[in-house]
Length: 255
Image (cartoon, rainbow, N blue to C red):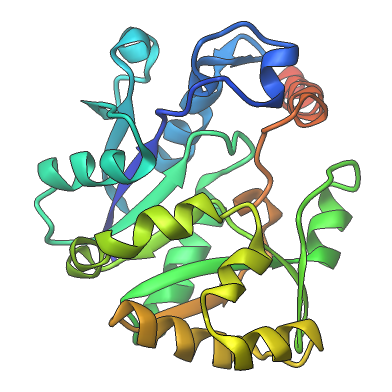
C-alpha cells in the first residue's frame, strides 16, 4: 500500500525547548548539526511505502528543508496546516501525518506501521506503543502513559487516514489536537460510561475504537506498534539531550 506523507512542521519554539535553544521554530532546532525536521523527511524517504512527501512549514525555514519534500507554507494552527497539505495532495492514496519532532523515526518503523494498517479494514489508524517497549529502548525518556485493560501505552506521533475521512473530520480536529498531550481529556469526550471504565482501568482498546468511530463517523483502528520511535518526540531539554547523544553516536559509527 503506497501512501502520501505530510510532515507538520509549523510549531513555534514556545515550549520547554526555548530554555535551551533560541530558534524560532521547533522544526529547525539542530540535532548533530541538522534541522530536526530533516531526520523525519529522511525517514519517510527511506520508507518503501511512502510515495510523496509534503512538508508544511514556515517560510523562514523553507531553504533549510530537505529537497526530497514539497514545501507548503504553514498557517496559524495545526488544523489549518493539515488542510493546507490536503489542498495540494491528489487524494488518491491514504495520507500519513507525521510531526516534525520525532528524529528517531526510521523507514522500517514507518513501513511496519503502514503494513499493519493495510491488514485491517479501517479509515483512520493510530499507533500505540507499550510502556515496556518504550522504556526498554529509551529508559531515559519521560512519556505520558495511559492504562487500558490490555496494558499501559503511550500514543504515537503519526496517523494514517483515508483522505475523505480527514476532509470530513475538521469539526473535531481542533478539540482533539488541543487535548492530545492529555489522554484523559480525550477520554472525557467519549462520555460518562467510558470515563468510568477508563478510571477503573477496564476500558478495552476495542471499546475505544468503536466509540471513536461513532464520534468521527469513520472507522478508527488502534495499532500496537513494537517501535518506540513512533512515539518518542523531542519536546523538552532532556529529550533534546538524548537525541543529540543518540544520533551523534550512531552517525559517528557510520562515519
